[in-house]
Image (cartoon, rainbow over the protein chains, first blue to last red):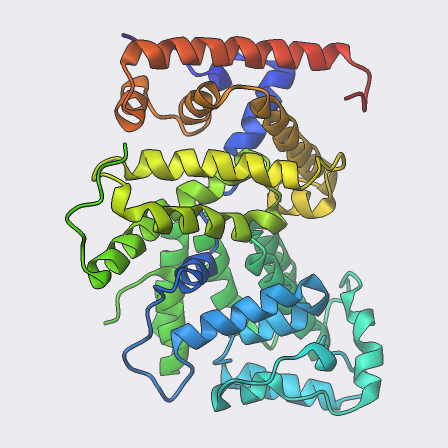
Length: 237
Length: 184
């Protein structure tokens, strides 16, 4: 029996629009969903080594907490999904947070879960002044400035992470494109790592791996390199 | 599809099999649920719901019928999720964001999300067997022979379900065209 031609190749008008839209939903779940699902089923794998840092199981639990808190606390979900921030990024976050003139790390201290392990300390550090909290909403506005403040950049990457965490990899990529178009950026490595994840989540595994390999050529931080490999699904050397 | 619960595998074998099933079918479940109209914000929970059922029924799922079981479960979970959501009429920007494509402006993205929602509504009106064949053939782009194998159905049954599904789909699209904007 011969298969008929698929409707998407024969229909026109409304029918075609509906079929096209459904065919274009993201083909793959975002990377974190696998770990979360395994964790929820009680068959999550605990990393056998690297106990100095948070185990992957802890990460899964922490992320689940963040997601449960919801979009209102995006900063929390986002930060806990990154238990091992690149040193420059976390240092940058601290310096930006202490700069009250352009303040704006989108943190929600009252909703922040207690850090489970010392590895989370950096991410979970309370914002130093109330002014920072009040100023936070301003960074959620669209960024048009050619040279963003560090705080703005952090907020931008948080938005990308949040998009990724809620299954919107294309949205994350769009935000990262926006970030990349700015004249000077200080969080390039973090943005690149996010881009690898977003590409993988969008089903563009080849592109994710190509980018990761290019980044690995110049990566000097072993932890960053490991995260790149993990994000792209590349084997350890 | 279900086989007697014997011999019983060890807990470790059971866990390993479950992990394998999740790894192999996660993406398939993810996009199937989305296509069936589960909102992006509910996807994660519903993916877990699907695999919770799979975990419960694991001993009874015969080798080779895993995908069929996972898919059938996803269809049921999606129907349930849509009912539980009380049929929200509005497609939100968040839904649109999940379909965001750098080549699309927000309006186009929203249109696309609304189209996913409309198709999901049409699919909801089909009976389970017909909907399954439509999704697998038209969206997942399996061949009829693959569907027959996966669903353990005669090829003729797959063909007739597909025919029915197409008629239903085309009729539903035509009906929609005749209705004024916003009518149920």
